[in-house]
Length: 89
Image (cartoon, rainbow, N blue to C red; front, side, top):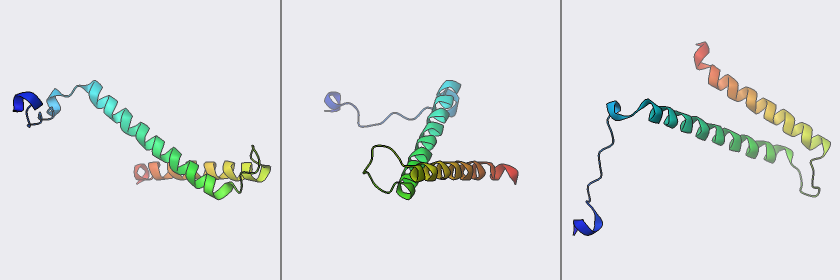
């Protein structure tokens, strides 16, 4: 019955020699973008929980805006320090 449903064996992944540099570069870029997406989502969630008090108004008030600005700045600084820390050792 394998002729109806295909073989149950999965093809072996290509060896390192068979993978082109373009594929490797695309996978690297995809990992970077995924990491950036996770960092942005974490920052958004953290700063929103810390800074937004209510949904009464359409726009952020002055205190909320300042809090978000500081939170984003601190988060960005922390991420940069964590990324560059191994390079400084």
